[in-house]
Image (tube, rainbow, N blue to C red; front, side):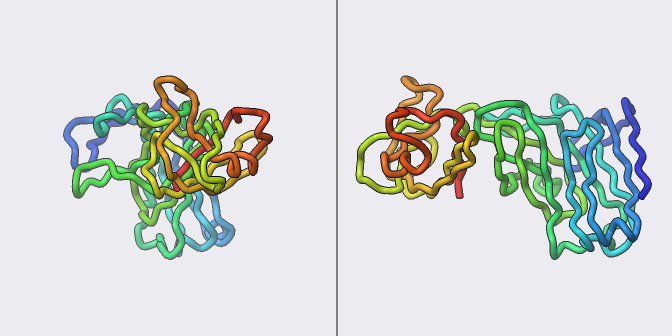
Amino acid sequence: MKKYIVASLLLFGVLVGGVGAYEVALVTDVFVDTPTILKGYTVVSSDENFFLGIRPEVLAVETRVVVKQYDSDQFEFPDGLRAVSNVYEFDIFNKDAFQDEKPLIIRIKTEDTAERKQMYFYNGVIDEWVTLPSKVKNYDIIDSVLHLPYSKMVVLADDNYLQIGDASWYGYKGCMCAASPDYPKGTVLEVIDLDTEKKIEVKVNDYGPDRSIFPKRVIDLDKVAFSELGWLGHGVLKNILVRKK
């Protein structure tokens, strides 16, 4: 295993499908040898905020793996979304080495924010940032998987939606259900207490709470569902993560 980290390196490249030069801030260059292929390896960016997990035998032969880090201010993103991480580009140089039966595991550390976040990759064919199936772990960690040997990636937040906040309760139908201002009726959500790690699944069947009155409330749980996470006497539970199943 050989690893080279080039810090404060000023390089210039052209974004595939885009126009203009983009300054590369930091580069991590790793050579993955045969013993490492057999046991697996995690490539970590120079700023230690991007993690590329390579499972055992995902690579067929030895290859270089390079991770480049860009300042997100250099890029344009979809309207209404803002970057809460740097842009990271990874490249498995020997494309024949990549066996995509098993995905690569991606983890990105982000800004500490409660707004709804999702991981995106840049699709040069259609010249757009495209969403990836993502799982928010807490305020500043998001995970995803990818079946590509090369990609530019970023985490974008939507300030119009809340993902982590307070959970209140109300008496409604006495079921594992909830009211949400962010998801339509019928949506199944996973609700997690980040302090206790208790989790439940609920189905949205109503709208609320009103964010203009309760700006920090992420969901309103039926009392049956609320009781699975805490005592009704608490009234409100703090530090609750809500994500779509």
